[in-house]
Image 1 (cartoon, one colour):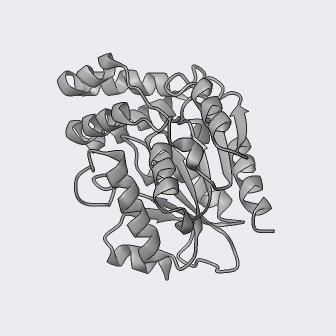
Image 2 (cartoon, rainbow, N blue to C red):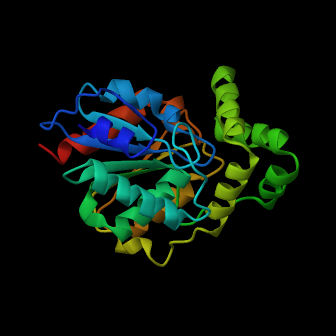
Length: 258
C-alpha cells in the first residue's frame, strides 16, 4: 500500500484515501517554500473522487523530519527516491512555486518515473526580491506577512491570508530563508526545453510573486505544453480559484489515461 510505504520511509503526507485504486491515475503534489501538504487541501479531497491524490511534505516541513536541502536539485533527488520507493509505475506530478521548480528538475533528472507534470505559479527562473531575502534573516515574521500579502489577490478572504502566514512562520526562519535562497539561485532557462513529458502550466492572472510572464516562458520552452491563466486568483491559485483550477487539472490528467 502506497501510504504504508510512505510511513515506513518517514515521509509526511496527506492523501485523499488510504486505498489507492490501481485502476485510477495518481496525482502527487509538491508544495512551495514555507508551505506543506496542507496547501493542497482544496485538491486532495475533491480530486480524489476521480484520481488518487497525494500531497507530500518536503524535508523539514509538516510531518517530514530533517532540514531543507538548501538546493532544489537536492529536493528533486529526494522526490525521485520517494517515487521509486512508493510507486511501482510512473505518476503525475504537480508542483507549486518552488515545488514547480523541483518538479521541473525531477522531470529532467528521471522522466521515466513521471507520467505528466503540472507546473503551478512557477517559472524557469525564480529570482527573489533582495528585500525579501534580507527581511527573512532580520525580520522574519514581518517579512512573512509581507510575502503572504503579495501571494494572494486583493479580494482574497483574510482568513486564507492569515493561515498562509501561520504555515510559513511555523516552518521557521532557517528553513524558509534557505529555501527562498535556493529559489533565488534556481535557473533552468537553458535546460527546461529538454523536458519531454505532457505538461500543463497554470498561473493566477493576478500573481505578483511569479507573474504570468514566467508561465509563458515555460510554455514557450516546453514543447507541446498547455498554458492556462486563471482569473480571480494570485500566486495561491489552487486555493483562491480552486474550482476552475481543479477542472483544468482533472481534464489534463484524464485526457492522458483515457
